[in-house]
Length: 319
Image (cartoon, rainbow, N blue to C red; front, side, top):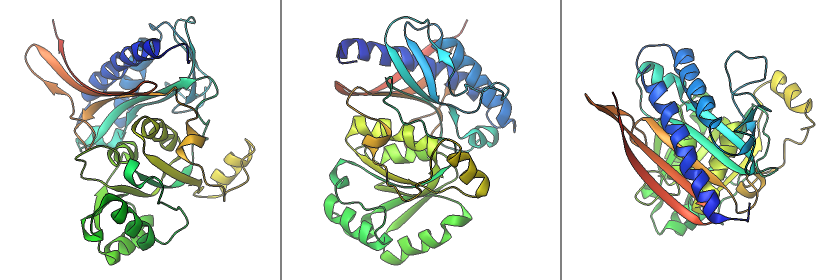
């Protein structure tokens, strides 16, 4: 896609319309306890909008297999079939439970790159550590928690007591949380949404300095695309939760569970773009707001070539 940056910027702005429409559709289900219907609304809106754009896309990170109800499935072709050929990674509604129960931090997300760019991660789990540009060269997935936090603190020019670590609030992370607190660092626990938290580590004035813990593999690829645009880093390793996940990974030839992947391994090259729209407010974006005559969305558009970060506030007038 080196042909060029102007066309890639244009596509980034096209994709923001897709995430906006998906976010608005999902937001209508906020607090109604129907996470499947919220997800379906986002998927339907995203698919329809993607198919109106001049490009040839293939979903390489999606929400399900072809035989699963309404998901944007891996291998699905999207776009009008002309224009650039792209890998598409989507999360039509990250944090479906947040929308269903009216909790913070829900997004609609798209990451794109030229064909062969995005790692086709099977849906399982990975151990992760993510940081912003200043600390990208000091993290080590195998290092003790305190060592990583000490090095990140030094890279950021902070005392370790001033470092904030985002951790998904799960029982499996109880030991990690104790180690963070024992080091003197702060924890920011969250219920869902590690894409937003991973990206937040690379934003100025963010309350989060580092993401640690185990989370979804597909989210790792999407986050890596954004972090490449921002200059941050994410290191991950497969960590299947049970034998079913081991067999799922083995079935596609993944047998090495010791290999560490970097952001460059997950999202290759410099021609990447990332787009997200907030559904419910979180560390990355404000959520949807409604008035009598319009809906307001807050979105983020980034590309790695050219290096661009754009926050967009849009009023969608309702008839």
